[in-house]
Length: 339
Image 1 (cartoon, helix red, strand yellow):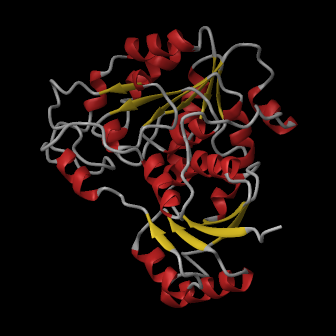
Image 2 (spheres, rainbow, N blue to C red):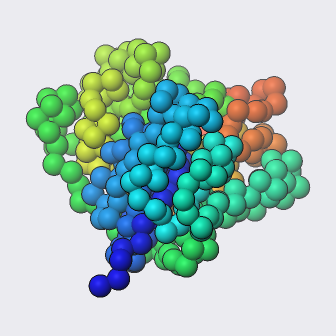
Image 3 (cartoon, rainbow, N blue to C red):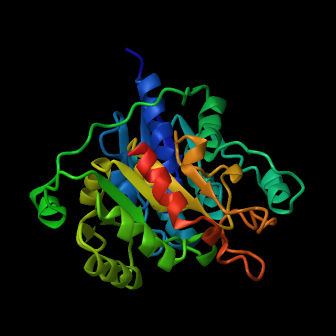
């Protein structure tokens, strides 16, 4: 029997980018069961890779033990001690991963092509057409290593059995469950809170609403929403990531911004409705395996410069509320049409 080939995958951050790698790695291991995968990522993201055959996670502490060049050298020594890798797939391609690769023992290195040139043209208004998805860019890395991946017929994990702790928080309601993650890293990517309140108020009359987020400021807002309407529960700050993933796998639909929660739900095979402000799916960051009409887009007649940036961190004056051109009625109607 031939020796199992071990490929090191580097993807240290951010949450959405790490989550987008999951469907690709699941397809890779299903289509090439002889391959072993070691994922190098942050400890927090380890639960993302549970239940994927032949995948182990090696955690990096880039803000502590593995900080700076000396820390990366130490990390490389720890990885090299683990075993020599047949190949290294750099799905991050930042300075940190480039330095790390110099210290690792492997003759095969392939880095992601992020498509910076065409993304710049999209932002500058020189073209307006769909670019290659991030999922396909990840898959291209493995094809370059000799593993062509078919992403067209994905298989997802079974719905998780909820823990007693999770049930104690969300209950055993027989209503359909809608997850809502109303936050994003940048204001230009977020739906106006007063509009989201209208969405929650209407949907909570017929469905259970489960709110997701993180950080104390977000948790405070989510607690206020929980206390304002019936059939609304906030799980942020109350559960482990494993438990949150279990609950997400039990949702009937997730409503999210262009943010990490959209990709987490999509990697579990959940239907995901996304609200887009100053960013746009054409940049390649739409959630995995979702119909195009599940993305609700800002009105480009009113905001013709959309997308104003790839990540939503840059936009002209007056564009921060671009997502407000999507009415609550549109959001509610889309969710009701698929739930």
